[in-house]
Image: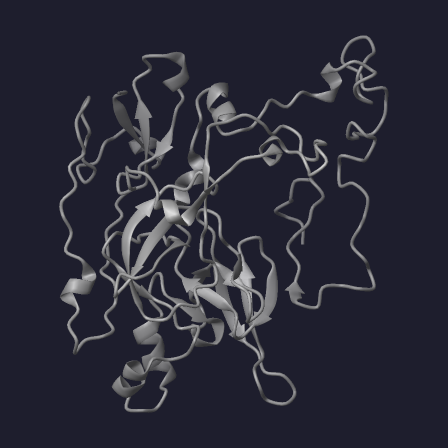
Length: 374
């Protein structure tokens, strides 16, 4: 076992300082986790709706290791000691087999390059729609090799059904979440006096990990796993650390609000159905982007093969290959099949635009954005 060290992503003056709030792990020590009381056990029958407990996430730290080998000298990993150490729930998984692992289609031809090999995996079937009503208890948080975000194993109150969902940042084992896609429960309606009060409804439902229709979510709330239509599940903001912001709830000319406007992290503002689903919070594992694999072998373990520059190939293998010295023949950058590599061919129709997009994301065609450019 390697000895981990903690690297704080703070200012330059306190980059290498270890704070007292983060416990140190010594060599070959077992991380002892204190047993947490399930939230469902503390919620009585009279209090059916209770907000999840707040947690102090502490400072942002990455786990480093002593350079006992060259492959771990630059290894950086997010600290996720709360993840489940065992195997997944096997009934919700299926084996990942076939030629699709190597980037090949049904005829055996390579359609996606630089894919192949890697560790054996099992695909987790994740519930993006969340149509099942009722309270569900988070049994554990697991790592999913097929996605960057973590997944949570939910168990219904009667214990009859288990499902996987994309976990929210800060979600832990024992939390209670609920889906309101099928409507407002009768006990919640009775607690409001039989009348739907938007403010009281948001205070009792818009909690981390709950799945709601977008028209029930207050403006300014951060959501993830956002859907587009009322019949499908979440399609936006499903990777690690992603989220969208509810901007407004629009009214058409007849006075009925059919759409809700959300703003994505890319800057795009678009309209989605008011009955589309969304989960309150931010997708888990937000520090995934700061990880460093440390060596080329870990890239191969992930099923990613090397990428060779066309300039280093022969003329028979690539349009940029051949010649004396580093020269691509005074041609524009192209793919091995001659397609333009910078921006490519324009394929977006000018007369048939996407009506759901209110404001397009900034496009700079690979050029740097100028701060002083108006």
